[in-house]
Length: 242
Image 1: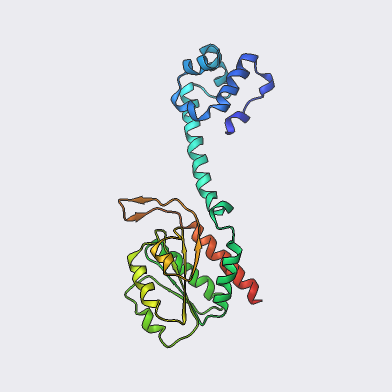
Image 2: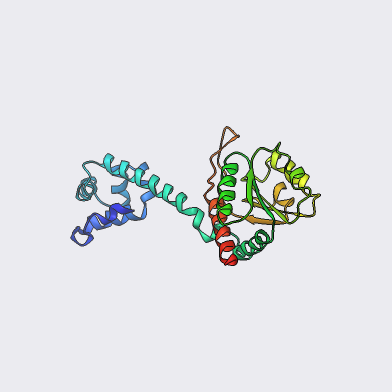
């Protein structure tokens, strides 16, 4: 944590160095400790603890604890922001799946994205991105749209469904209606590869994300991994089309 860089360790007394090291290796405990607790654990006096706190630039121990709490919150936010780009959150054969989907896109007459809620917004972004590359692409989040009828007399279509839960009833109904059309390949971008939606698909592009909901229905789950995968897929399509 950054407060450890605000002081010259070599200029501290031996007792202050002991206290410093105790704080360094017990950062998570600091918001719950009193000065006397730190003094006891570090085998020092409370006055020595306060001298170190002042040397680190804090007027009081309360200010120090408040700073630690804010830093921990900032670190947690930063971890969540960088999480969508951690290799561990994507399958080991990610490039293989992207390549498979890219070939399908390049050989399809139509590329259709479907999803509802926040996933529907990402679908709009994905279809626009591919349309800008010359791919005949569109998206729909209105599940009453007669997509099966629209694609009935077409060939080589790829439908990509986006869903955090993988159990969105409206999307399940849409994909079920498309399964009988052999000219349609169905793919899903979802964190749940064992979900109903994934089971209805020919290709699944999974990822890992914490599912967060408020009052059951309001979804606060991050869509950044899905955006990342769509952009990665578009990059593969672009490279293979050159």
